[in-house]
Every structure is written in C-alpha cells, then in structure tokens.
Image 1 (cartoon, one colour):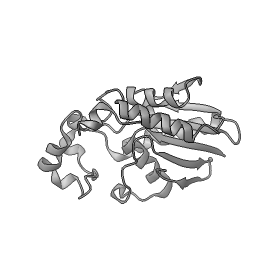
Image 2 (tube, rainbow, N blue to C red):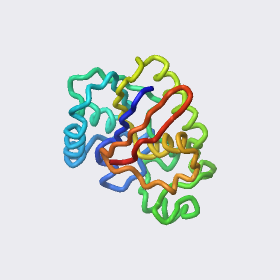
Image 3 (cartoon, rainbow, N blue to C red):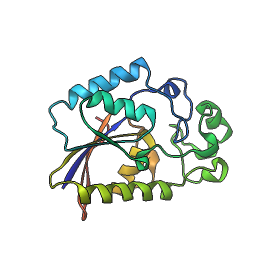
Length: 196
C-alpha cells in the first residue's frame, strides 16, 4: 500500500486575481503562496518521503520545492490542472456570469462545459490520473510514503475516483497548500482525509 500526501499548490498570481487557471496558464506563487507552502512544509516535516511527484506547472513546482527543498522531484504532466480550454486565463467572475449554467452556487464547475470551453472532460482527466496512480504504485516500494503536489480541481477529481461521487460540487475547493491523504493499492483506494 502506498500513502499519498496530496498538496494543492500555494496561492498563485492568477488565484489572487480570480483568473480561471487551468493547464494552460502558468503563473508563479505570490508571497502569500510561498508562506502557505512553508506552513505546509512544517506540517509535513516529520515525514520521510520515499518519492516526490509534482505537476510541472510553475505554481505546483515551486510549492514542491519549498516543501522538500533537498528532494528529487519527479514532474509528471498527468498531475497538471484540469484543462479549461478557452476559459483558461479568463476572469472567473465573468465566466460565472456568462456561463452560469455550468457553475453551482459555490462556483464549482459542473460537467458539460467542454461544449463551450473546448476543454478537457472529466473522463479524460480521470483517465490520465488513473494512469499515473496505477503506474506509480506498481513502481513504488511497499508502504511508500509519497508527496504529490498538484491542483485544486485535479485533487477533487482524485477524490471522485476514490469515492465515486461524480458530483464534484459536493466537495469544497481544497485550500491553497491544503493536504489530502489517500492510500492506494492495486485493489483498493481509500480517502483518509481531505483538505487539512
């Protein structure tokens, strides 16, 4: 069994400006985001990670480098944020107004938006994430402790894979630098906690 500590990146410039930031927008951490990553580093300091994975997008890469500055980090494109297509880089408040039918009252994205955004589908995103976890767990030693730094919507999709909820609006967006812990084997996947 592999235990994954999944961390959302710290606050990025696009987060602070309420810009829809998916796989195509690559902004760095703000000063606040760096501080959030340092706080998470302190929370995780007692762990001796077997392996560290991160999305190659700058905000996730910077967060991983702050949390484990001396570790070798493996960057994997499958951990990138959900691809919002044409909506990437747009003001979120404008999208919430113009495409209200694709967002719930908490501004969570609802399925079906790819018709308009020309972005990724939930099925496509979950397939790449399953591919990552299946491959990683086959290569990791038994009882591996793994740090994985990724993105808010991607983390919600990982939880969907584990719980089979499909309704991502049931989950709040993970906070910047929040920690989610899962256990993964070839036979079972368990959510231990979400967004601590």
